[in-house]
Length: 175
Ligand SMILES: [Zn+2]
Ligand SMILES: [Zn+2]
Image (cartoon, rainbow, N blue to C red):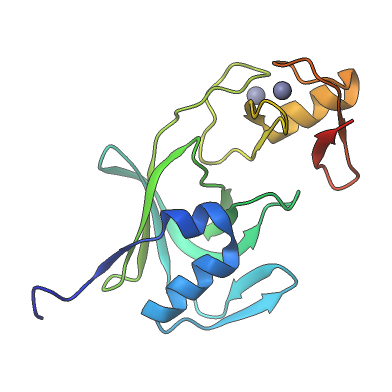
């Protein structure tokens, strides 16, 4: 192997944007077979590994089952990962992720996680297994369930106090 051969690709921006961009990046580097079901890319072979790392040490590992978009259609990708014990969904966002790299030789997606943001409703860290949403006005971040519940009850943002509402798909919008 020549030393110039690229074996690792940074796919952080693609992951933060849309599943289609992630899948295009993966497909241009790996022989990936998938079926698109609505907005979800279901892997036909479980060949793609995914690990989570915190400051260089791995704490979670599994095979990617599908890559989909967030239920409220906001930017970002969800990975469903099979750990053999269970199926876990992870949602890497700027709030919980340092970077995402694809190791082409290993067929491995490596997510370096870091809790950088606290939920504006409950005050706890926003982790990689949490779905995240935010206020469309002040962009305060929160656990998706916590903020949608809050807005359903109070019809305001807990931080900027402006009027908000929740659509039937769970999207928070200015009222
Ligand atoms: Zn919360
Ligand atoms: Zn707000």
